[in-house]
Image (cartoon, rainbow, N blue to C red; front, side):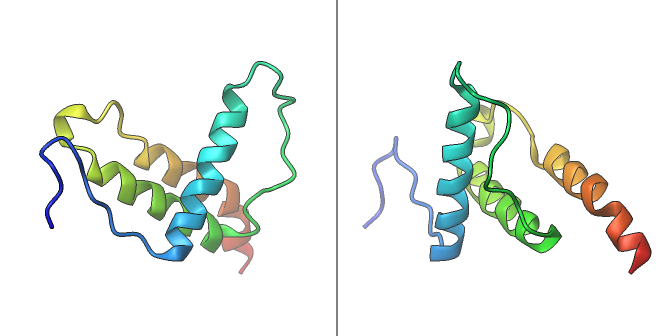
Amino acid sequence: MTPRQDKIVVALSMNELLHITSLAHLGFKKMMPNDRGFEMLRFSDEEQALCGTSAVEKLERAIPEKHRPFQHSGNRQALIRHWWHAERKTA
């Protein structure tokens, strides 16, 4: 079955769905006025962060181009590169 014209179907693996729901939850918490600015759940390494941004990019690609509000992929990639840059240099 094809979706209605105003609907989009996205096929996600269980791992991608877990990443997206975690990121969506954290994003929601950041929007709350009582956000304390810290979170106990963090990416443990660069590979986990890259998997998370890949899942978000899959969602972003599902949005028709004329409706995409921003292009955040480059920003997320830069955050990952800058955070784990020192670790890569020493390896």
